[in-house]
Amino acid sequence: MHNRLAPVGRPLGRRTAGLNTLAAAVIGMTLLNPLILRDVGFQWSVMATLGLVVYAEPFEAGFKNLFLRFTSLQNAARLTRRAPASSSCSRWRRR
Image (cartoon, rainbow, N blue to C red):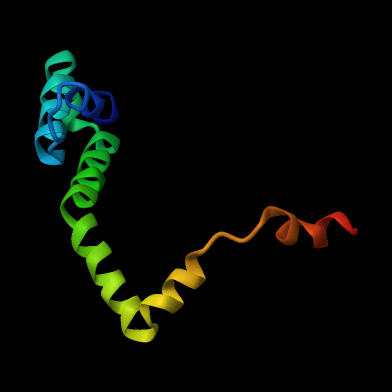
């Protein structure tokens, strides 16, 4: 339900807030089925989504800093540049 609520704010010109959307999804699903709070799968799903919402940006910043520590900005751009599809698939076509 979280992924169904998030796109609602974008057409309205609002930035989606992950915690608010998750809370709205949990409240909505609880109103539909109050016993869902006892479902372990639901609890794991909410906790996993909460972890992604809370820790995604710090992890991304940390990985960028770690990556840039070992390589230059130009090398990072070169490494992330997309290779042409013909050269990457040519060895598979020869078989």
